[in-house]
Amino acid sequence: MQGSLWSRLRLTWVARILLGGIFVYSGAVKLLQPLEFAGNIAAYQLLPHFANVFFAATLPWVECFCGLMLIVGWRTRPAAFMLVGMMVVFLIALSSAMVRGLVIDCGCFQVGVSEDPPPLWISLIRDLGLLLLSLMVWIDACRSRGSAVPA
Image (cartoon, rainbow, N blue to C red):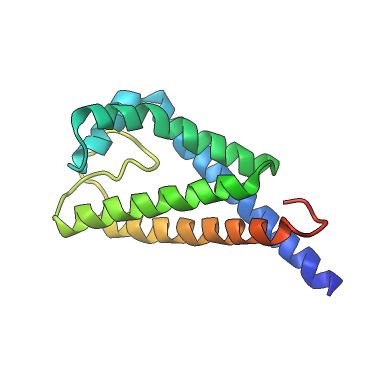
């Protein structure tokens, strides 16, 4: 029993650090080029112009903050829950762009427009993996809330 608890804690710790690092990096890239990121958001053709700019200005901060919270292990449950919500929204936006046949850069880890963006299905698969990882961290944080082991 004790061995499985430690295995679960190690797996969750690795998942938190990995997920946190990914989101800190992703947010930092977008923070450095907010106008280009607004262009990436606008390419999805889902939001009015002011909303593209608003999300380009706020989303990177949320990504960085949630990532840092996971890395340091502070308030992991709400941070992971926020990431689950963001991943669901990202997946819906990507799916919508694919269905409409848009050829765009997803804007996930590099901002701006490239000559030959990778297919959106690659981003969709990656984001599904990140959603599963976020769900795993969130579920574990919910389980750990009632135990003596801090989340």
